[in-house]
Image (cartoon, rainbow, N blue to C red; front, side):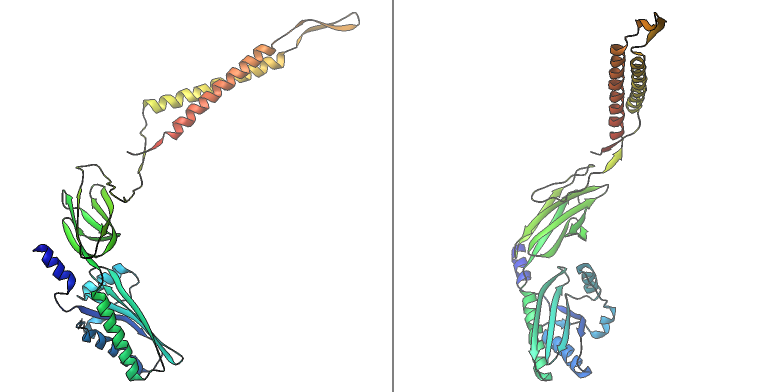
Length: 320
């Protein structure tokens, strides 16, 4: 029985759709021609069996540039569909572009345009009325489906295509095709996946949320969330690494300085003048010792610098 009810809902509307003609811009032409164009659009939708939102209620209408705004506007007007478009006169031709926006699906179901060259007021009205009727038929034939989203435990926010639509357990009509579903539940739990819904299908998405930790399930395509960066708390290990690294660098510098001093003293000795010449019976040979101290000091200093660099790198680590 539920399947039969769904098929009947998808096949034909249970009531006459409420259509609001908003943001219909008529450029150029006389005041009489503008009135003809708007009346023709409204008459075309009425002939298709739609119910028009009264013009007095359209004072609530605002210029919207995104689907979320249009959906909110349609909800305020209690409309099932919004009609927007532009009609302009270029030389001796009228060009009309109209579109129908489904409020429940939050998407444009059909766009059409026409050009009427050297049209009389009557011919223009007939052509635009036919365009409006054609748009309504295409709107009704648009591929629709139903998406039911459940979670364990319930109470998670449901985001459909980056738009908040309700709280689980939740069911809503959607356009047939691919969608991204994301569940969000405090504190920080987030599960996302991509689903494909066929025309006339009722697709059930049942996701399990962990008790405390944030979990991401990837059946086809996951919503990838950035990993938080947390600071590693100070502790004895970090202070120990810093202290040893600093001492090693200082000690290495001292050893290297001693090696340089030995190299400077190499070859010096006690010299005196004897027999008209300079004789040095005792010479200091400190070259080997100087090189040894210099190399040892360099190695110790490098080791300390490496230890300090590792400690600095570990000050911030990615969270789990």
